[in-house]
Image (cartoon, rainbow over all chains, first blue to last red; front, side, top):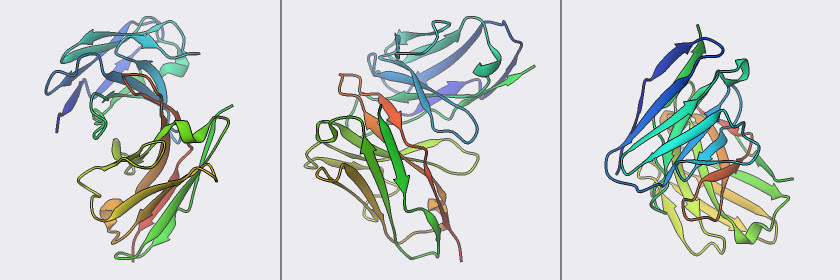
Length: 108
Length: 120
């Protein structure tokens, strides 16, 4: 199984900060990498698919990049509603959709 | 508007069974692949099962293989998860999620989740 490793596991930042979260795959997965946001008590929400494509309705301050084994999610200017937990997910195989362990983004 | 609504969760004793349902609306159900994902309390997300639109292709995570069975009824716009031989490790919120039919296969819509608690 290809492991997905996110860093950092937690992060504190101020409103207005630029924040980057990294996800590394144990093997190359091309661009089959998705990012989700989850708020407490809610279902995950798709933010970015195919490593860099913004899901409809998601603010443009969110962006994704990367290919192969290393990927990043960037929030250009943090807003109060962005404080949540973020997960990456590989989707290069129809028989396995592994998630990263999550990155909890908290207000400083 | 796409809706996915899970039901069937609750408190169950170890070793017993439970069947979860996910009712879908707002899209042509039989053309979409579906998944179940679970989240243990305070922990991360674990994909556990996939089913194709016709129901002919099915996959499971190793953690549930041989104990859980995914199925769907396209006439009822529903996907199911039959869970047998439950243990405390299966305590989690269970989500159904739609798989978007593009090459990179993201989960574009999720239900609100249903809580399964396995305890004596």
